[in-house]
Image (cartoon, rainbow, N blue to C red; front, top):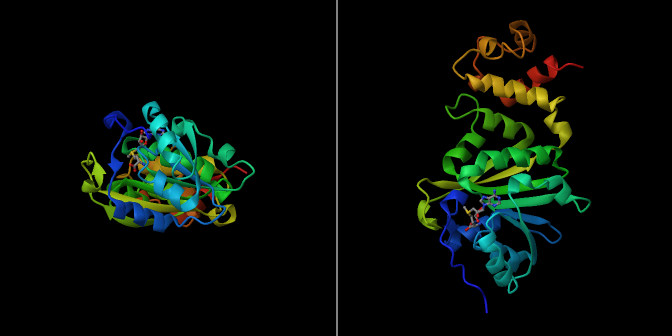
Amino acid sequence: MSLPFREPAKKSLGQHFLHERGIVEKILLAVDPRPGDRLVEIGPGQGAMTFPLLDRHGALTAIEFDRDLLAPLTEQARAHGDLTLIHADVLDVDFTALAGEGGPIRLVGNLPYNLSSPILFHALEHAAGGAAIRDMHFMLQKEVVERMAAGPGSKVYGRLSVMLQAYCQVTALFSVAPGAFRPPPKVDSAVVRLVPRPTEAVGIRDARRFSDLVRAGFGQRRKTLRNALQAVCGAEEIAAAGIDPQARAEQLPVADFVRLANQTATP
Ligand code: SAM
């Protein structure tokens, strides 16, 4: 007998369970698992995506923080395939170790929205170069997906856009209305695909330097680069990289951030 999911959704864990089959199908189509792929789901919840992924692919690893969901997930998964459940905070999971020798993993998840940015930055730490993570398909607040995919000049272009786009190809796929979830979130959602670029294509010489520069640039986004970057590099260095020191970070393409970081990195 399968155990029912009796627990009410926990707001503190960002639990909004997907119930619209059509959306699950669209996610599956986007992920398009192939034989041999190593799928890892973040936050399986009550299995809305887990069980269809298992039906389709046969095996899956999932990381869930809510202890109360583990027994019913394990029990119900038996009818669908081979589920390896990891009870952990995803922010503590070392994706590089999880990938191990077996080749890059593919991350999938309807993420807890209260943790979206920390999860994205955590994944990015392991995604750089693509050796540990082949790609990621995430459901997030639509507003976050818009920030992730925004280009220079957009009001929502910021640190998240530059950091993610420097290391990954970011594609917003489709929007999802609140009614697709129980309970419905207060905001619209969207599904996004991130594909890590190979290290040569990223071209960043010093990851720390790049991250510091982007953080400083957008720390005071209304300031000119000359002022915003004062603590990290001088106006002459900005100009020497072919960038107008009077410009603002929100106008600067990702490639300019990379060039500036590389030219001002200590050898
Ligand atoms: N995938 C399910 C679905 O689509 O119906 C659930 C999605 S729900 C938005 C987010 C899931 O992430 C919940 O199951 C929640 O318990 C889990 N979660 C929240 N914080 C977590 C964390 N730090 N680490 C791992 N899982 C977490």
